[in-house]
Each structure stands twice: as C-alpha cells, then as structure tokens.
Image (cartoon, rainbow, N blue to C red; front, top):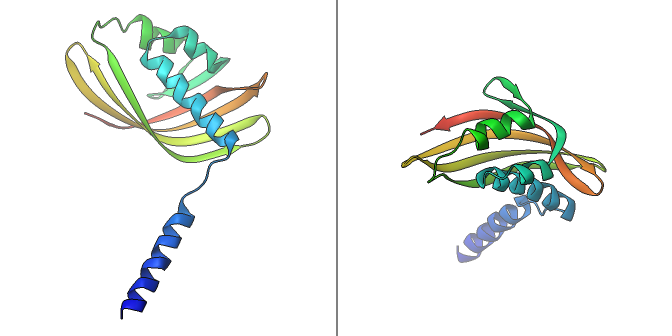
Length: 149
C-alpha cells in the first residue's frame, strides 16, 4: 500500500511540475514592460508611462477609447490626492512573443489608497506590445473591470 501511495504522489507532483510553464527571457522581458508601465502609473510618472508605451497607444477602458493623454489626465493630472498609493499584483495567464509583436493576458489587482480610503480593484486585461529600437512598448491595452471594493 505504501508503494502505491508513493507512486501516486510521485505522479501527482510530476504532473504539477510539468504544468508550470518556464518563461523564456523574451517572455520575461515583455512581462516586465507591463509591470514597469503600471509602476509608472502608480508613481504618477507621465515620463515613465511614455517610456513603456508607444506614442499612439490605445487603451480600451470602461467602454471608452483612451490615448496616452487621456490616461495621463485621468490618472495623474486629476489625481492630486496627497496620500495616493497604488500597489499592483499580476497573475499572468498567457504571454506570447513573436519577433516584433507580443501579447499578454493577465489578471491585475490594484490596492489603492486615496483621500484616506482604501479600495481594491480587479481587472482582466490583454496587452499588445511592439518592439521598437530593441525595447518593448505597449501599443494596445484592453481592460475589463472584474470587481471594485
């Protein structure tokens, strides 16, 4: 009986280990670009946002089409709360990389403090990135709000 249990446990662990995808350096680089863009957003850093985005980025948010100027207006210019803090966590679902194009799907959870109030927001997002001058940049971002609390 012990041998059967050990054999079954070995099978389960090998299956779990095989299911964990090892990311290529290119996939890691693409994911880091997405993370850094959101770090810039959290820091209210418009220069950083532009560093990780194409000049003609399109963002599909709340049923609207935004440009980089819209994002900067809504997330930075109009967001003047002195106690603002945003912490992001990602659960990457899929990362595909071609020579000059990549697309990433992930769950994003942001914990936001603003005007003394704490809220948590969850999205499901897909991002398309392009490689320009050896650097990945976000070209399109489609966001679906899952939950706000």
